[in-house]
Image: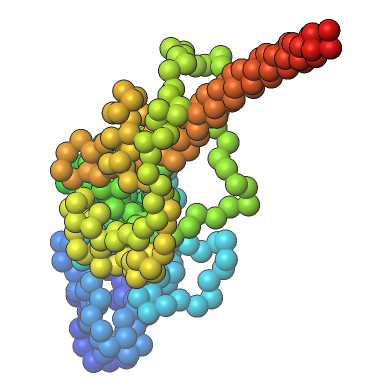
Length: 413
């Protein structure tokens, strides 16, 4: 049976091979199927021989962008080329893809929350992971956040790289930071030019920002604002860093620092030094020092610093407690310096109850050099004095010999 009608038609019935035609064009061949129209589209129900829909109900909305409202062959091809939820076969590398064909970023969601974004030229940021870059304003920030909530709070921070669970989580406007590891640079919000590598490296504390700092190692970070600080090693405690512009090597369990060379080369060009004074004491300071040997318990340091037990328990101090050391007691050095009125730069005094005395042993070289110079001067004076005494003794001997000769001659008269 063929129906040819210029208006909408409802086709029902049980006979096979019914064909719906519109203005002479065949549209649907159906067997035991139903086709009906509404104001918004077409519904086809059943039909084992239907061109579309086998044993199912298909709702087709009115096609947009066409004068007739009919679906074109290209529209039907788009259904056939869909991506399947259970995987796809027959894809062509370099041809088939998931993405956009216009100048628009590609976004992903999980549980209707942001889970990925690939930006384009005007905003080249890339985020991948649940709520990664969640607050980014996409204003040419050029950031990379990969991992659960990586760069979560970033708004306008520029050129940041966060790799790992909640890496750079609190960053808002801080720029040029690189964090690799779970919780790396977690609390840094507005600090710039930092690098942290390792789990909880540069983790920080609420309201704390770093600038130009480098943290390499698990769980090493200050808990106050710092600039130009470098921490290399695991579990370096906040108390070990007493000011900006410091480099800290290892935690309190380190027993040796080894290298091929025997010393550190420092800049010492006279052209950049000023306020130069020759006021280093020698023997007066050195003679007051008391060299000693000793053992140490770094856990007491952590008690003074107030290091959390959660950090201290991860540091094994058993070996360093057995090591025997040689050196000075900082308090004795302080007394020696005070005794001769010397403001010794090699002594760092605590500024509060949570800091400890520290010594720079390299600074003892200069007083030792001065002491040797003083001894050398004294030795030269003694040599000259001895030479003068020797000359006088020789002169006296000559005079004695002359007297003895005179007496001898007199005795013969």
